[in-house]
Length: 73
Image 1: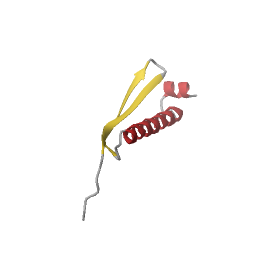
Image 2: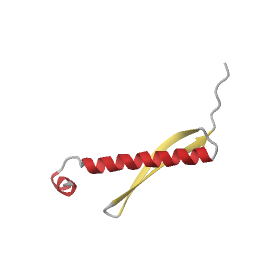
Image 3: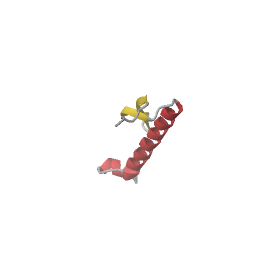
Image 4: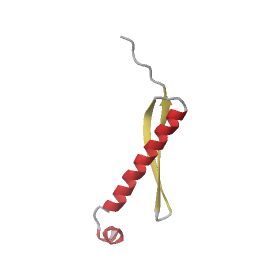
C-alpha cells in the first residue's frame, strides 16, 4: 500500500510512523549515553538523517552532554 501511495502522492503514514519511532529511539540512546557520562542534561540537540540505499533511512540524535547545577536563591 505504501508503494502505491508513493506513486500517486500523499503522505505514507506507515513510513511517517517508522521515522517518528526511529527519532524516539535515537533520543533515548542519546539520553542514555549522556547519563552514562555523568551528565544530567543535553543542550544543542539536533537530528541528522540520511538514506542508505533505497530502502533504509538512518536517523541520529546528537547534542552536548552537560551537568546543570540549580541556581542558588
